[in-house]
Amino acid sequence: MRKIQMKTPIVEMDGDEMTRILWRVIKDKLLLPHIDLKTEYYDLGLLYRNETGDAVTARAAEAVKRLGVGVKCATITPNRQRMEEYPQLTQMWPSPNATIRSILDGTVFRTPIVIDCIRPAVRNWERPITIARHAYGDIYKAAEMRTREPGECVMTFRGKSGREETLSVQSVPGPAIWQGVHNKESSIRGFARACFSYAVSMKQDLWFSSKDTISKVYDGCFKEIFEDEFRSFKSEFERLGITYFYTLIDDAVARVIRSKGGYIWACKNYDGDVMSDMVSVAFGSLAMMTSVLVSPDGEYEFEAAHGTVTQHYYKHLKGERTSTNPMATIFAWTGALRKRGELDGVPELTEYADRLEKACLDTLTSGIMTRDLVLLTEPGFNATAVSSDEFIETVASRLCRNAPL
Ligand code: NAP
Ligand code: MG
Image 1 (cartoon, rainbow, N blue to C red):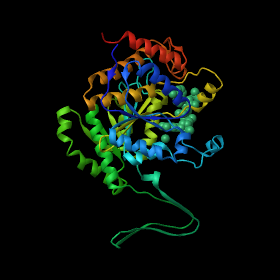
Image 2 (image 1 turned 120 degrees about the horizontal axis):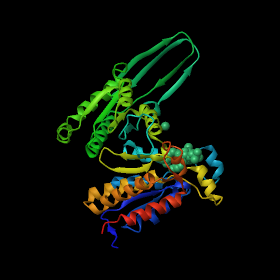
Image 3 (image 1 turned 90 degrees about the horizontal axis):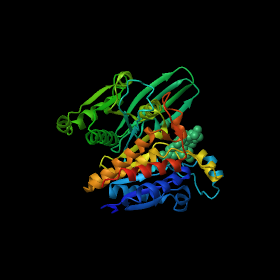
Image 4 (image 1 turned 180 degrees about the vertical axis):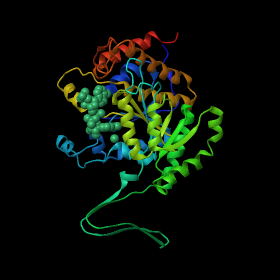
């Protein structure tokens, strides 16, 4: 069988623990037999990040900027406990995802993988809901303070020109807490453009919600920038028959619950953090959530939404066969291959991504799945829990059966 030829490499970012093990199996069983896989490989495993003083993470992100498409395995973000587990670490290195996000200035889109035998907790949801989360600023880059006596807090902006603007936040009669948050106009514009471009590429409606009735300047600015950026996408939206719709966050929540799904919901940083967990669990599980970071310049980085599944890795090290769900990691690869195929004009690659996804979904629908999913299936559905290796083997043989002649 002739292997599919690629034009431009995909940036491949390897990771840690159980997902690193799955990464290898997915490549060996599902990709390399069918594709003459061209990747530019970066090892983002914790030990190599440490060895390079984390320079490898920035190099990988720069490579995504250069080549346009990347796929990333889950990675350990070290904390105190990890410093004890890996005594060779010279620093508590930052989250690679945060580093990559800040270099690509991206927006994170998370979409659940939906199958018939696992019904969402919200019964009327028929199609996946994608959360687009702004990944810069607000409370995630806040200055906080706790005070113990009566007094007044003022906020001062000191311009480069020397001009100052001062505002009284509040006078308080006793102990109080304070928080200074900010966002950058450039980042909000990038967020808006990434959302509109993604809606166009998915041919889906875009909703955006905030609380501009209360936060008239801050959230009002988000709303204004979205309206402004929409002007250059309006005709494309009309051509595709899709709409842009702004509403207040509380109204959006009510509408989302009553909806049939099938749209993109753009959320500010905190709203996106909370709502993406709500949406993923209501659809089934974090192990079935795909995630893609899209930069304002149209670079794409695909990954699974879950972590390195540490508990399963420890079992794997003891020689146990684990039933870790590889779906989101496989779909990170298919997302990257499909996008590469689209950008390079290689329809075989795009078609292969579709076929691999179908083989995965057909395997699940036939009742063969990892343990996490068996627990979620509808009553009466006949499901068998298999190991990760067995699941991937089953997908591989289904893929060969479904191969085009
Ligand atoms: P996690 O790896 O997502 O796992 C949490 C639990 O969720 C697992 O113990 C497992 O539950 C279940 N789970 C997650 N993915 C699964 C899968 N594919 N198949 C089956 N079950 C799955 O989160 P964590 O334990 O909080 O974090 C572990 C490490 O991952 C940390 O070092 C963290 O820094 C890193 N992390 C990385 C990323 C990323 O790179 N994008 C994201 C989050 C966390 P059971 O044990 O009950 O089976
Ligand atoms: Mg969160």
